[in-house]
Figure (tube, each protein chain N blue to C red):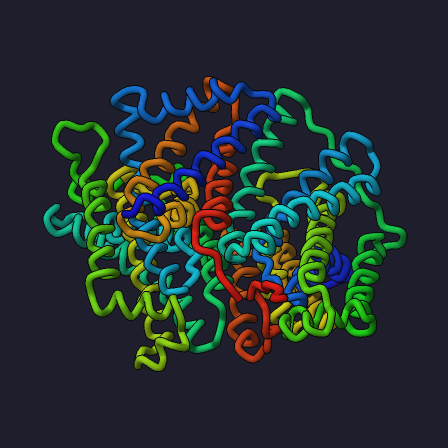
Length: 293
Length: 336
């Protein structure tokens, strides 16, 4: 096996797509003024749901749908506390991640006791080499989110809610509705990303299998300066770096395994150190909004 | 503490327990049996009680550190990584650097090395925040992954036991172990230290000018700037303090409990510490009962799994509910 070939490109796409989808979810939420630290947990919930429905029905479509809807449910739990109770989004998001880890872990162990043989989740096969339905779906999602935010009235309202909630409200924008909608839609993106991990990458569920991808998605939004195209570019860079890391493992180089596993996190930290300081976040990000009559 | 301040945390616990009971029903377990098994596993006999006290130590240290960080408006989510960094360096000192030293020297050195490593790990996040404008939320989360993998690398590589049999460090020499308290089998001196330090943090936070500055920054960075306080300097301080406490917790774990370093050393103490601090309403003294509660949950969860068939990870769900209800209903809400 060579270090570089077409397989590396395919692997890059496979590793980048879930990151890009999850980052679109984060982008939607943040543009509306909601800092969503719980993307990781929403992905994990989506992954388990996709696995459960996928093995039960054998339908990858139903499994993806279940993943997205479970992402929405997890996002709703987050939104109840952050938007309704005006709880701190960072603490609430951290709690959601803990909740997702515990809930998916216990549900998985109860649903699939060790004595029952596990079946694989249905795999979403490529249409053509490298052209997977999930690649197409992610591309459509990115274009859709970008067009929505830039060219529609509703997208303008969302951005206004994130930049100047007070002013938007006085212009008749329903700030709370925009934030709820974007948080839930973001949950759907994250849940779909989790479903991709199960139906496309590993074909099974493993506890904590998202292993920080939700946080990488958060960093990608900053890296991309809140612009969908640049976020995708970042996701592809990450995918490529990760694919290369797996390739190095497979080639059996004398690099300790744990250090190779560390590279995505080091890379994310490096990207943040280089780009985070220059990015201007939406002005009203993570600020609760109370309508004054 | 005024009565109203006690009502909210107790209500948060009760609400979380009620929701957890509902969840247990949904999972097909009997909530009364499960919670009964949990309480028995945490307090049922002498060994269970000692086990709970031992688990309380890291939660006290991390919880006190997180209280002070959150009070200053610094979101240190990196307790887990700081704990691992502390355990790693403490193990290096005990098994590689000075394995032959005397106990009077070695035990304090091991603990100090752990605290310094945790402070350094928090300091990286502080440096990225001050120098590069990176939010400490993301950097501390990423540093968690890096520290956990760093320990995995160390116990497969430079710190692996000399026999090379398992991915774990050599056992600590006796002189590097925290002594047991008189009359106990498992409760080590670190538990006592962990009970005293929150009091010191309380004095620092509420009875010193430095603490006033930290709290002022948390209440309003802009206003504190007018008062001649540099918010970023306070940010660095609390990341060093809370990181140091978490690193100390890691050193206490390896020196007082396990006697060696291995992967999965911590069952998520760094994250549970956040729940502890929030339930304590970010009060360093409130951390004492809150840590006892979560330590009991952790040490009782094994019995719950054995007796009632409820997976031990369910305890994480209960923890998450306590955080949700604490921030949603018990802590003062933020206004725009």
